[in-house]
Every structure is written in structure tokens, then in C-alpha cells.
Length: 127
Image (cartoon, rainbow, N blue to C red; front, side, top):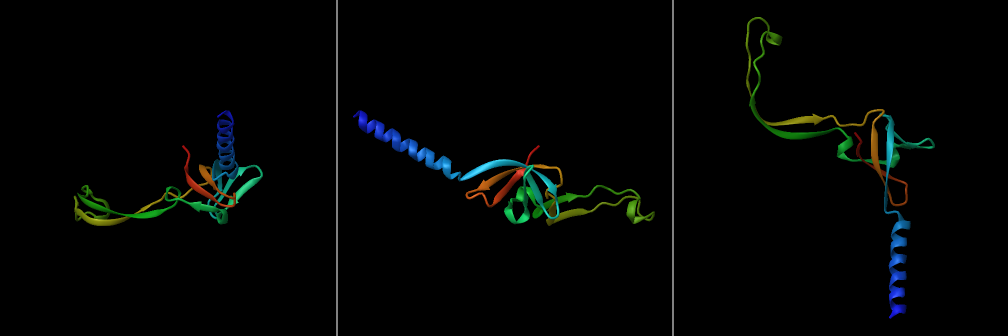
């Protein structure tokens, strides 16, 4: 029995070592050093360019369609000139909005290094 338990322990340890050595995904922190073209510095010697990056929706501009149903606030004077003192109107239906979520210089980001270490996925900004 002792030999069987030792054998199982060795097999389990070998499996754990294999998973750890394959590095299916490592996480790292980077800093955006350039917006266009996008460059992210991981350390003093390694800066990643766009060709090595996959960007999630968390770090890109994108559009969303939203349902709206409200009345605008009255505008006093403003762009309609002196002929209208107050102006408001209904704002109803589906509207498309641009979410400006792109990365900017100086932001810290968390990246996942994909197996093989050739590509990185930019998951989100930090702080």
C-alpha cells in the first residue's frame, strides 16, 4: 500500500508541475506609453506594440443602443435665441451612444499573457 500511495503522490505532483510549467496564462501589469499607435510597457526592456495585443471592450471605444424615454430640461435663452425663453421636448426611442473607453497615455493596465507568450490580452485598466 505504501508504494501505491507514493506512486499516486508522484503522479499528482508531476501533473501539477506540468500545469505550472506550461503557463497557460500569466498576468502582468503594464503602462500605456503611447495611444496611437498603442504601446504598452511591461518593464524597462519590453514594450508591446499593437500587433501583440488583443483589446477587450473594457479598453476600447464602442457604441451601445439604449432605450430612452424622458423630457429634456428647459433651455432658457440658449441657442434658440430671444424668441423662445424656455424650450424642452420629449426624447423617446432607441438612441445610439458612443462610449469613449480607449486607453490613454499613463494608464496602468492588467494584461493576460497567452500560452506561448507571443500575444497579450489587455483585460482592464487599474485604478
